[in-house]
Image 1 (cartoon, helix red, strand yellow):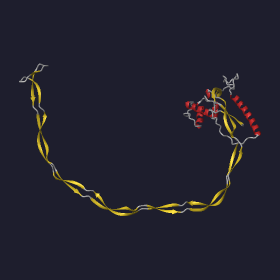
Image 2 (cartoon, rainbow, N blue to C red; image 1 turned 180 degrees about the horizontal axis):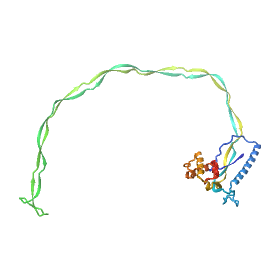
Image 3 (cartoon, rainbow, N blue to C red; image 1 turned 90 degrees about the horizontal axis):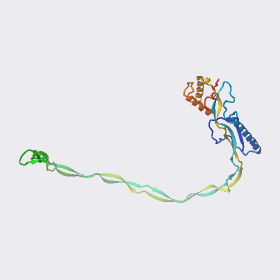
Image 4 (cartoon, one colour; image 1 turned 180 degrees about the vertical axis):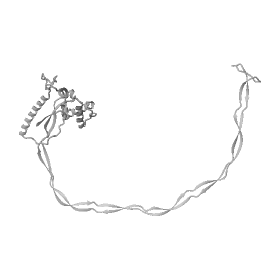
Length: 357
């Protein structure tokens, strides 16, 4: 397997997918000389990657990976801060076998020749012809308005008015206090009471009474008829059978002169070059040069905000203040560019095209 390393550290803020995109074209099986060159290139690439890994590690006083308390290459008058450096990756290219050596079978078609042949165009059959129906006019007497009966008033009904008494309040007996022929002692109060009759009261009402009912005479009106002409079937629809003989014609047809055959071809293996990224080191704390407090002026804030707004980052306005929107835009820019995050650094200013002088 041939491996070619592409040097160059990519400080991406997030791990990319390991599914390798196609970067090369299809290649045939390498020669022994190419295999030797590929082996040497692989060894050299592995050695260079190890060197990059050693460079990526943060140096320390005692030789460990612990971040030193003071930047090892600090300059007088400069300010430094511990920022979160992104993971480091290297790009590699690997040649993989896509398709193994195989055999391809080719089918050679048969050889044909033209000959004259009598072929059947249509078989003998019976043809059915549909004869449409014929019609004629016929008169018919049709009832338009049916007979109907009506009643005619001969003499109206006669009524009499009678007066009739109806009871309004019925007769009743009530007990009253006093003396009389009929007396009774109320055992609860000790009073002497006697029963008095109150007669019923009537009132007169007028009432209409039927003396002779109304008399009617029944008359019948005859129906109304109309003579109509309508179209009726004279001869119904029918079919006629006709025998048609078979038809032939002479045509040129192809005949196999030599049958088809199969030929086997050897197919060489196919290789493809795939690119992938290998992580050299994880995200870690590292010393980075940052603007000092005296340099964090509004003028620098204006420069940073203008540079970020040109790149379509939202800084929350153009006021020269490092507010939450501006700091968030700086963080997004650092992640996209693979820079150390945590605060504004000199490398971030350089990436924005701003000098911190």
